[in-house]
Length: 226
Image (cartoon, rainbow, N blue to C red; front, side, top):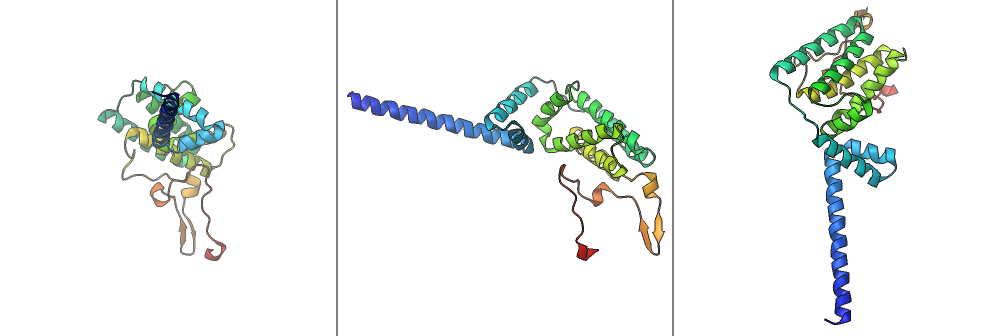
C-alpha cells in the first residue's frame, strides 16, 4: 500500500471513530434527558456545564443501581393512604403541624421504598432517577416546611406545601393516596362559611385546581374579568 493510501485510510478510520464517539454521546444525552426530564436541564443550569451535569447524572444512575429498592405491599399502601387522609383532616385545625407530619410521612415512605434518607441532597439525587417528574414538587414542599418552622409562611403556603408533598407521595405510593377524598381543605378559619347575599366561600380541592408547577406564579384573572 502506498504512503498516500495509508494516510487516507488512517484519516477515514479517525473520522469513523469520531462519528462513533459523537453518536455514543448523543445517545447517552437522549437517554439522560429521557430519564431525568426537567432535572437534566436544572442541573445543566446549576453547574454551568453540560459535561459536568451529565457526569453527575451518570453517577446518580450508578449509585441508584446499587440501592435495594422494593415495592410496597398492599397492606403498606393502605396504611400510608390512611395516614395521608388523617393529615388532610388535621390540616383544618392545625395546618402547620399537618405539614410537619406530611414531611415526616413522606420521609418514612422514601425509607420504606429503600432509599437512604440521611442527607437531604443525596436523597434528592437518588430520587431523581425514577421520580424526576415530581422532584421539584418535593423541593418546593421541603422549602415551605423549613420556612414554616421559622414562622415565615402563611396558610396558603402551607396548603401548597401539602399539595406538593402529595405529588411525590402519590408517585412513591404508586397511586392516589386518597381516591374519592382528594380535597386538601383550607384551615378552619377559612373554611367556615362566609355568606354575603347569595355568595358562599368554601374550601378548595386539589381536583378543582391544577397542581401548580413549582416556581411558576399562579395565573390571576384579568382586570376585565373582575
